[in-house]
Length: 201
Image 1: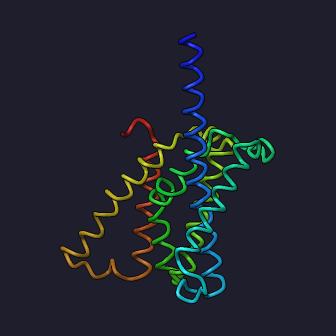
Image 2: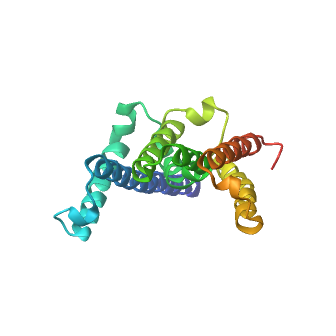
């Protein structure tokens, strides 16, 4: 009897964790879609004829309804992994954007338009995180979420070197757009090389 009860409690905790992860993931997705639409239409939050509190409530309401549908068979209808909600939340909000922020800087130095690039970067990171978490991307790439955290750590560590060179040694040529983009791309490549190799850290 006690084993059955423990199994039941464990199942409830697992389901609750999945639901919470799904809720936060959907709330983040709504936020990202809002950013992309705002950038695409040139609209700012100040121009929205609704109180910020009402917008926040609407986002949370959409996330709640979406979570209810997903955990009640929606994942199966979409062919997605029901256990991927929490993984998606961590990957989309933190791990993937932090791991690839040097690439965002490299594009920014070459292309400009920071607002549009930021929106596209966050949207791309979110879609990539969704594929990783819900559609077997992690398994196909033989990765785990912590690998992206490791890439982020290496990106910060390696990126601090050229930043220190500019701030402390006053190396002016590193501040040109082409040089800065090249360095940022190199930092991104090195961070991925070291971060995705399990024998390094």
